Amino acid sequence: MSAYDKVQAARNSKRLTAVDYIGKMFGSSFFELHGDRRFGDDKAIVAGLAMLYDVPITVIAIEKGRNTKERMARNFGSANPEGYRKALRLMKQAEKFHRPVLCLVDTSGAYPGIDAEERGQGLAIAENLMEMMTLKTPILSVLIGEGGSGGALALAVADEVWMLEDSIYSVISPEGCASILWKDSTKAPEASECLKLTSHDLFDLGVVERIIREPSNIDDRKMFEGLKMLIARTFDKNLALDTERLLQTRYARFRRLGSHS
Image (tube, rainbow, N blue to C red):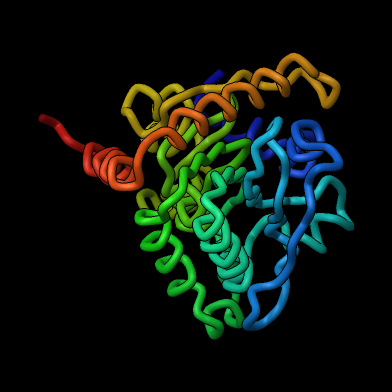
């Protein structure tokens, strides 16, 4: 598959969404929590508590919706400031009780509307980046579809970042990049190759730690159980670290990105 084929696969309307992963891995143990305690509840962010085997965790996911009605209600997975503030509220709650945090990311980007900017979209994202870097509990982020710009990064400052094989992760969409570089959005396929946005590109660059195989369908029990076990092992490993070591390791991870030494 070409890079642009991967982009189209990540955007496929039939692709499993965050609520599918939550349902298959955590079932009825997931208890959703709502609101940022400032403005309202953003339905693009699904967040709450769940049991990972016998360990309580916090789950924060960006949900696009599975049909037209759901997508409109979820704003097509483009979160508003209150969504990122809800996510941060639950991360700080997880820190208080030393619960690991699992983030499932699938968004073309944060909502760019005027009302979102009026409510502090940039500040909300920046606060998440800052607070996640020093959050005193393990964090794992998994890109399950699109990972677009700051909207994705706001939930991806983690101890490890994983990607599904056909997911993408980029500072800008291929169309946006093509419009800037060539003044022609139809050059998106060429931009996709330049952006190095596929899971294999980013693994080779050291931006992500693991590539997860795609589920064949929603009933792919082996894949979901395998992913659940990998998440549990990673959290067990990071829970065993003292807080200072955990934070130093997370900081060092991001300092290494882009290094040529």
